[in-house]
Image 1 (cartoon, rainbow, N blue to C red):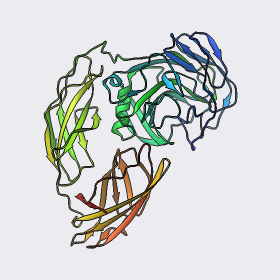
Image 2 (image 1 turned 180 degrees about the vertical axis):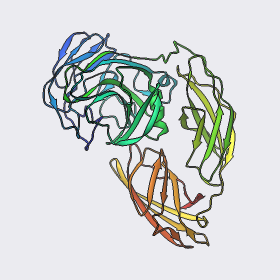
Image 3 (image 1 turned 90 degrees about the horizontal axis):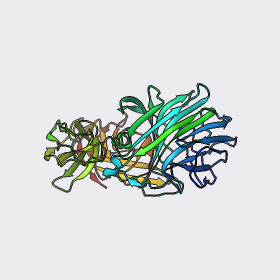
Image 4 (image 1 turned 45 degrees about the horizontal axis):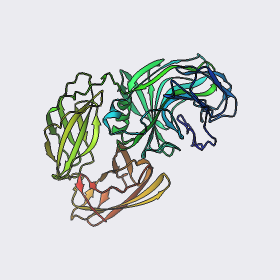
Length: 465
């Protein structure tokens, strides 16, 4: 059984076998040395687990009424690989070991999810190699057992030594009054890590604040389910003295049972439309417990609306649009207690016809994927079906799911969220009338590897086939 897979993996995935053992009744001041041993605290509301998944040396934790402390540990793992363990306390379900009354799994699109808050207080030694991190798990289905395959959100409060999260840094974010370095990698699921630029020993936050950022970056989806909220440590070297002094999960967000929705966003405008994007702006909503974000909805040519993003501020740029197409948008506000406002007035925007780059003309795109497990390649053939030559080309599309490009050939391929652009590499930049060119790329995905349904060449919509 897979217990925990490399929340800070620096070199390849690792499968861990074992059985998570629950030690029964809720009680405090229990010492656990069993590799996957666990017990409950606070009448079963939380589970404390030793979870010595990455090492065979002895690790022991002393469980208290509010958390635990590592009392025995002799890890000595290479810092370019996996940590030795993840001793932690959690709320929800982890490999069929569930705390009492959590209500998890819970879909991330619900107002209840939007109001979930959590807090932790930790103590650290001044030596060893370790990180102190929340580990928050999401799955495409409401599963209570096995490995989650949606997203793993890691929130690093502190670290010691030359260690780093999975993947590479993709940006920074200002969340919960602090600046975080944002990392992303895929090891069969997306690992999105937030490393606090200034270390802290305690934290109180709304889970949705971090999840909204991951959704906006294209690494998570609102249809997925929260399965557990965990707080603990990943030790590489050592480390006794790591301790969770207190941990809690609640539905407050400061609302205290608040049921009053935010005011409806006003003055929604659309501007700066190009062949593939449009800028949206609106006035801030007001609320007694604070607005945490704005849900953005879109319809095409008068069709039905669907949510496309959650913005943290009062502006959003919708990308991946088709040229010469009419779109409708509205927004609504969400507060810290999970209440949502009414829908704003609808605004309409029409994208331009594209062109440029020596002539856009008309075009045809053939997209042929080859999929396996959690990876795939795609061969893309672009044909200039116009009567004029294209000098310099850019092909753009949006993925419908959780696909991420990792390498490419015969084109420079870049990705922002679900939006992708492929540009010529010079020697293949000229497309005569009727001529074709081909490029390809390799990527990873979770869920379903659905092929893109629309492409543009220099901003002009192409036919498929």
